[in-house]
Image 1 (cartoon, rainbow, N blue to C red):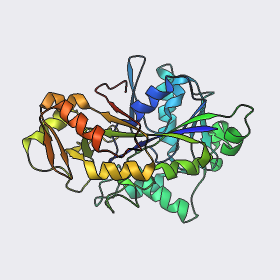
Image 2 (cartoon, helix red, strand yellow):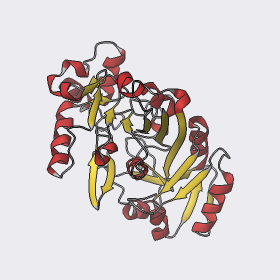
Image 3 (cartoon, helix red, strand yellow):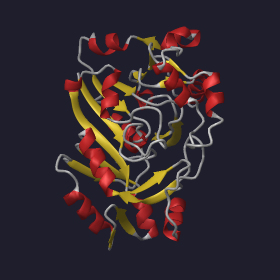
Amino acid sequence: MITDIVIGLQHGDEGKGKVTHHLLKSGNYTHCIRFNGGCNAGHTIYHEGEKFVTHHIPAGVFFGIPSIIGPGCVLNVNKLFNEIVGLAERGVSLARTLKIASNVHIITEEHVNEDSKDERIGTTKSGNGPAYRDKYARRGVRATDIDFLKPFLIDVYEELHNQETPPVILMEGAQGFWLDPDWGDYPYVTSSHCGVAAALLNGVNPRSLRNVYGVAKIYETYVGKKQFQPRGEIYNEIQIAGEEFGATTGRVRQCNWLNFKQLEQAIRMNGVNKLIFNKMDVLRQVGQWGINNPTLYFAGEEEIREFLTKSLPNTVQEIYFSDSPEFI
């Protein structure tokens, strides 16, 4: 078994879906696993020139490989059905590729109704938080209780550990490390764990870990109730140039400069050895380059690239600066 993991290093919306899709193009992976979150995620993917937004379904379905919704996720059956139908109508068949861990927990209508009343945190109102709460309170509903899901259900251990040829797995994370309930700005966090440790709880052997791909924007965004965006026209310009609207809710994302200290911490705590900065084109368009923590401004793109390359932990072996919605 060989395992690579894709995680977000900020507050979500970093471009993890794009990176996962790009890596899968190599044809080197036998499985793709979504390891956390639920339909609160929105991964934007460009496949063969068409734009897709997935919520539950792993990116591996676009390449015909087993694509598993792992036990660390929670699942809204109605939204999954709509997603399956929507992809099928566009020529993406999931009959043989989509697989669901039999021990995934279900987001019920009651969970969604409860979450829809939240005005304190600014959640996506998808029911994730109540579903995870009931999971850990040992009163949840599992996928095995839902007839519609039975054709998709698998035993993850059997799928990953009883193969004649050891699998090569790409694990696709949702949200970002600074939304993790243990490490983020509590209570303004998500309800699932978002780091490498969470991925390893989805049935893979920790000794199989090869690469951790950390994904960040060259600036920061956040969706929620807390104040994140400072005053200043530059942040509005970044918001407009970056088309910063949530893929799941459509809400405006607040913008700020890259938080260098938090980025460094997320890299160290997750063992990131390959780092991708997305949306270089946005700051190129607005014509300003800066970071926070420490506050620094740069004369141009080459200067910020040089600073990041020299200043980030030496565990990072490769850094990619991307300005494409499709490629690294």
